[in-house]
Every structure is written in structure tokens, then in C-alpha cells.
Length: 250
Image 1: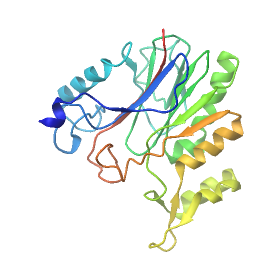
Image 2: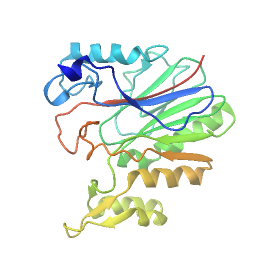
Image 3: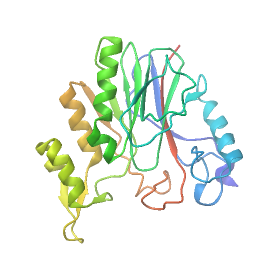
């Protein structure tokens, strides 16, 4: 019961004036077994009542209920200021200019990426499919189009690291066809011939730099190897989800 009685813990990056963001860990909730203990995903066969209790604990650190998305490894971006209540539709990113409106992304290996400026914030869920498909580009471009400027910063939260993310040659080829310069983010697997180790966080940072985002921070935290802190779908398909949230201080 020790973990169930602790306060939910968080990880975050550099402090930015007027903006709050963090990623939860697996500590501080009430879920049991493989979901121990702060699982925030309702779609992973955990006890729904436990998940709702965990979400209530998360809300203790927030100014309001998060805007949860129906994530599908796609590239669509929700305008959270114009479409509250449309959570049944598939989106993998969201943006807002409303102080106190909390954007949220659920992950268990994929990249959670948050963006901020003095006018707006954004959040994106990027697995390898969403990353190569352009979900980060779509989020940045929507912020620029809707709010008149690029985000000042992006933070790439805890995700599976290159040491743990094995992919086949077909995945590498999809990335190289899109941008040959990302070849340096793939290393041959030392034990599995023909397989590659992919640095998704590095690819994301590279793509964001190409867009002109001036400040890009990688958390350097690995969901796969740091089992004490995070859930990992690749480590165990029966597992929970962490949440990455961001909002403008009201």
C-alpha cells in the first residue's frame, strides 16, 4: 500500500514564465498489478474506478480538468478552444490560448511533446508513425497560423530511448525517404542483424529545429529502462499510461 498512499510524482523541464507543464510517473495512484499505481489510461483494461481516482489525484495539481484526446497515432490537431467536448474524434495533438485550460497526452513509450509561447501552448503525441507523418509539424504550424508566432520552446518528455527501441529496416526506410539526414539517428543493432536502434527523441528535436523552434529540450528519460518510474508498452503490453500536461497560468 506504500505506493498507493504517496503523492503523485512529476518530472518536468526548464521553467518558462507564465506556463506550467509536467509528466506524471507511475507513483502516487491506486491502480494495482501491472498498472501499479498511477495509471491514467481508461483504455488499457484497468479498473475504471481506479483510473478515475488517479485522474482526480492528477487534477489536484491542475487548474481544471484536462482536455483528453482520442489518440490514434495520427497527425490531426485539435483546437481545444473551439472544440471542447469533441473528444470522441481522433486527435493526437491539441492547442489552446485560454489560460487555465489543460492539454494532456497519454503515453507509454511514444514521445510526449509540449510547446509554449507567450500566447499559446500545445501538446502532441508522437509515436514513430505520427512522427514521420508530421504531427509535430502540424502542431507547430497550427500554433503559428492561429496565434501568429512559432512556439518559444518545445519539451520532449519521457519516452523509449534509442538503446531500447529496435525497429526493422522498413521503419528506417520510411524515415529516410522523408528526410535522408535522419540516418544518423539510427544505429545498427549490435545483436540482431538487419535491425536498427532508433532515436525518436533525437529525430523529433531535429525536425523541430528545422521548423525554427528556438529552444528544444529533451528530457533524456527512458520509459523502457526506467521501470521504477514509467510504464512501457514495449516492455509489457499489459501496462498503464502516464500523462504529460501543459497550461497557461491564469
